[in-house]
Every structure is written in structure tokens, then in C-alpha cells.
Length: 170
Image (cartoon, rainbow, N blue to C red):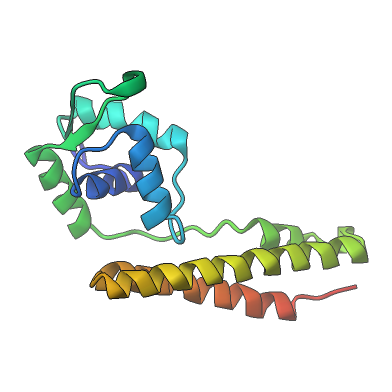
């Protein structure tokens, strides 16, 4: 669709519904609100913002400290976001660096595999602790949709931990 937006651009438009933000503020908000289940890089954010401005979906505010400029969503941006929400989400793509390494486990030494599994388990356990707290906060703030999205991330990390217990060791 010529006037459609990709998922990263849509996420930025969604975040801008909360009010004007600079690129850095958008990056922080994306990490805080979406990070447990959706990754966004700084380069993606800074690549999408000028494109959204060119399409008329966001407008630049007055420059602030260190030449930072806040972006705000326009009515056209709100319409583009609403269109994106109504589109089919498409298929997801899974990219897990631990699973990729496990696929080549025959080429690992026993201690390397053990270390890989332990490091992954530690990361998933830490993420579970953080995300459970975020979900609890979202629920207490009355953000049932945010809490529901975080429940997906909780389920993912639980599944990953169960999988790590079942992967072959040497």
C-alpha cells in the first residue's frame, strides 16, 4: 500500500499518541513499553522519523537542548496508524540466537554448550523477573492491553526456559 506504514513506523506513531517526543525519548519509550516483545534499534527509529515526516504523518516541533527536536503525530498519522491496526498482521519471524547455536550443537564442546544454556537461562530468568514487575505495574495502572502484551513475553520466557531444560547436552 503506497500510504501504508511498516511495523516500526506504526509503533512510533502509536507511541506518539501519548504526546510529542524526540527520537531519544521515542527510543526509551519503545524499550520500556515494547521491548519485552518487540525490538527496535536506534537506527530504525532515526530512519523512520524523517520518512514519517515526509509522508505528513508526524511534524517536527521546535528544537530543544542539544538540537533535539520533538515529533508529534498529525491527523494523517493517526489515520495511517488506524489503517495499520486494521491490516492483517502477517506471519511472524522467529530469530533466536541460542536456538541457532543449538542447531549446530554437534560442533560445540560440552562446556561451551553448558555455558550457553546457563547464560540463556540466566537471561530468561532475569527478563521474567523484570517483565512480571512491568505487567503488575501495567495492571495496577489500568493498562489491560499493555499487561496482556507483557503476558505474551512472560509466556515466551517460560517456554524458552522449559526448552533449555530439554535441549541435549554432551
